[in-house]
Image 1 (cartoon, rainbow, N blue to C red):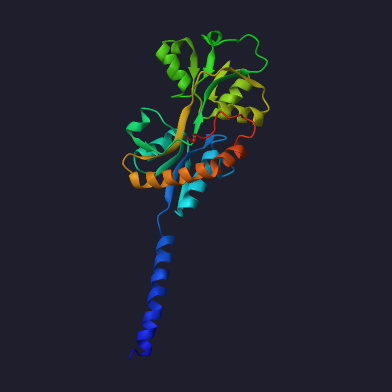
Image 2: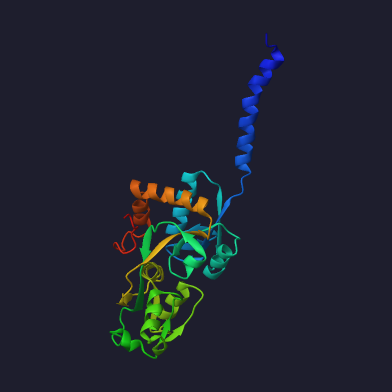
Length: 259
């Protein structure tokens, strides 16, 4: 007949196991998620808080997966290289292109971005792209527009300058120090509203770049988990609701790819 000590062991065993598993979960190494600092309304820093559509998507994903995570927010080039060299596990909101697929694996796209050319609203002298030849234009490295101009052999007809952030580009445009700025449509509209500057779109040739979560090449396990969560959010309409939060006035250009 089992004695009291035996019963005590039987009762304490499952409890100790449960406590051990809880402690292990609490000590699990957080997934490090890279985001950019100056790319509103997608990814940006607001008084030390990580904000934006892609940041909110990351929060939803890892909450659904029950996985601890932390943002690693830096200028874009640093974020890109952090994933490439394995210092972080994932990047939220990376545009997919042929160069990047050499280094990273991507989830399904959950929306598209569209590069456009912004000029000041009251600019009557610039009416077509050719009017920008030999004029200062703020560029957006690896953008569809600059890649397209390079393919056409016209890239060097423009005096392309670089800036550290899209906000700097919009400030230069507002001050009249450049004639045009290339940036994603939603970014330009957001910044123009924040800075109270009137802008208009000169050209919008971009068919749209798919945007997804990126992991280092070969990290199939994490990729599959994020993909499953994305599929659920698309089916539940959660991405659409989040889109409406960040892009209430910007039309349908950036909506998720639910196909």
